[in-house]
Image 1 (spheres, rainbow, N blue to C red):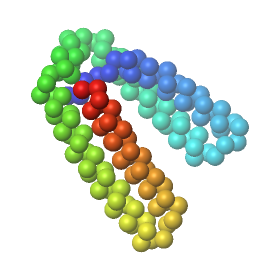
Image 2 (cartoon, helix red, strand yellow):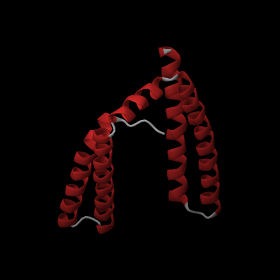
Image 3 (tube, rainbow, N blue to C red):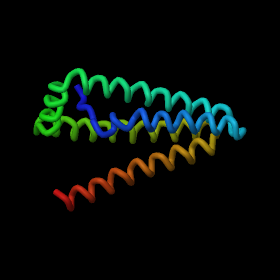
Length: 136
């Protein structure tokens, strides 16, 4: 099981409430209705997940202790590193295919956005690689 981030879990209902309140504010300001509904749904999901996380923390504290131990276990650290690298390769290939499809369909704006997202994806990889190469 994935470890629970206790700091994020505690702040999720608050962030969700802020997103929900901002969606109602945007709706009354006359902003695009789709954007307001998206924020409302996203905020509601964060509220629900945060409440579930708080209940899990309160009802099962030994589970949290076990997860903290698993988070620092060397085997689990290596598994996360390898899965992150494989995920990087898969998403890089997916971005390349997506760009090719947008080029074939003459969807220039989507193609430029996909190229920009891929550039950010690859740049963040190299920044993290450089940072951890110096740190470790």
